[in-house]
Amino acid sequence: MRYIFPFLLLCFFYFNVCIGQSYRYKNETLPVEERVQDLLQRMTLEEKVGQLSKELGWEMYEKDGEHVYVSKKFKGSDS
Image (cartoon, rainbow, N blue to C red; front, side, top):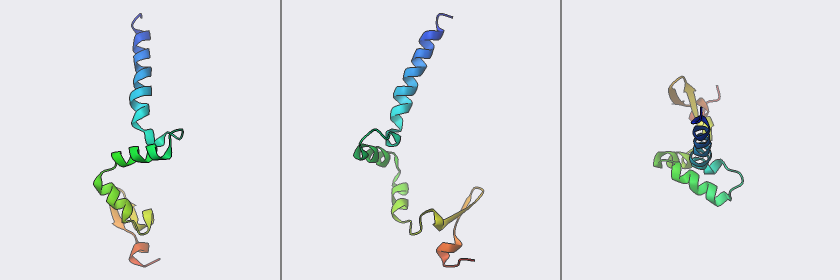
């Protein structure tokens, strides 16, 4: 019973320090530059290139379960 309070206190600090700071880009109180820098550091090279090469954004792809395909809209067909 006497170990419950220190354990809960440790959990509180863990979630506030480790988890809270791990998503700085989601913290709306931080400056935009700091949030952008945090997000860019988390992104892989493939994710960064992918963001730059999206002509139609998410409309460029269709997802069927686990498979991702180029959309009909991207191919030039609306049907």
